[in-house]
Image 1 (cartoon, helix red, strand yellow):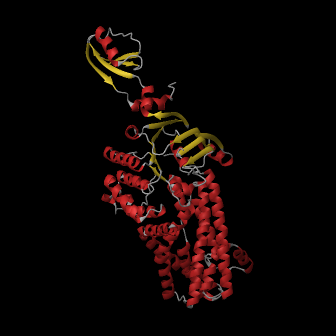
Image 2 (image 1 turned 90 degrees about the vertical axis):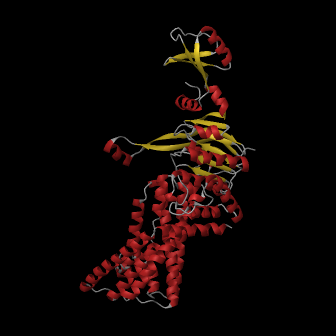
Image 3 (image 1 turned 180 degrees about the vertical axis):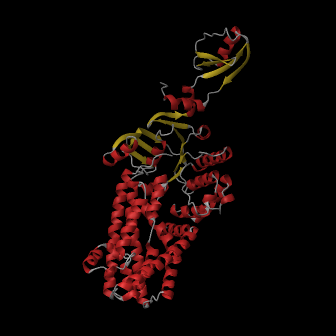
Length: 329
Length: 262
């Protein structure tokens, strides 16, 4: 049985609009017009125990809204969700015992209290035993180095320190599933690495399922085998990261040839070429023509001074999907 | 053990309040200034009019009203307002504890700190400098019970108005309205016993007099034992009513909750 199962999940918001200027304001006092925004539409999703899923999409695609429905914070407009056999909205408190959540831009720690106090309170809220608590804090401290600022009030922490705390807090009760909504936003490379290490470790050692929304391609490459892409509330891709990349990018070969003007290649599998600063970029479909066959033919016809084979660029893939949708229209 | 989480949440409220102890201290001093001003006004009034029971009764009433008010006044709408506007309310909603209990315990914790820092010293000052007389122990105990109940009544009232912030999105107006109505009708601004009979009857039908005027009467020994018990009953009744209102409004708010962005 899947740990998370969503069927035809839908969330519609009403957004009130008004005309410009003072007139618009006055008019809005009497009658208000609204439009319906479909934040999430007909989402079907199944996640198995122990998976690490990257949930991506441009700003406003409906990622956070999905997470808020899965965690029970928002009630779906229609459709059903089941998380570990529970309905997260109507059984919110029960469900909350088995999940951990980080909202990257909304810290859950108690602003004026030392870090230690926030954790003490969370320990009681999630009913963690003294023994487990001590063991886990020591363990998390090893990777996240919390003791550096354990006694400082949260308001004095840097963003990176705060996020390390947030992560530790989400995993404190070793829940079945952890939702991370943009956990690496605004962090430097070193902190990102530490946080990714921690997430990987929790997933591998404790078999904690992780669902991660992010705009950081590094997070996805490093952590997720499976990704789900959302666009305007609809799921447009669900599968392995590598096959998305394969499907979406042609391989590219960059050539430096002596006679740039006369370059014109007619080989099956080549999708096109363009010349750029004296270098020629050839894009080709790997399934039709292999790089070595292509190279052989090129060397027969032209004097190639130098060449370079470009690996597919995940960031470019994602950008392309955000701009054009999955069909590329 | 379930009670431990509630106890820890209560203690967190105290710890948070103590982080802002300067705020409590400064509001203590502004209350003193306020009392001095009120006393000046009432002294002037007493020169030109006959006050029922004389000036000293008014003075005791005003001082006690501030003692009680310092124990029961609240800013729960603000707590909700900032969380709703910033969207951080998601953090309360992701925890395995109901939203209303989290708000409730936080406020009780915060207020126990303020009571110790403001109300108790105010009472001592009142006794030392304004001729306020302490009642016998059993009346004093009844007074404490009345204030505790009054505190909870104010809390569920503020909890109900706080739920409106889910619709208004700003807490200022809601809070101001609640505080103004309560201050006017409860006895914080003027002694209710000075009202003409017909008006007084209206005031005593509403629940607000139970917040301040009621406990004052207990302190000043103007109620018999039975009357005190009846008042406790009325306080409990209204606590349950507003608790129901708050829950009903939260049930409605939950349905229309939108937490957008980020």
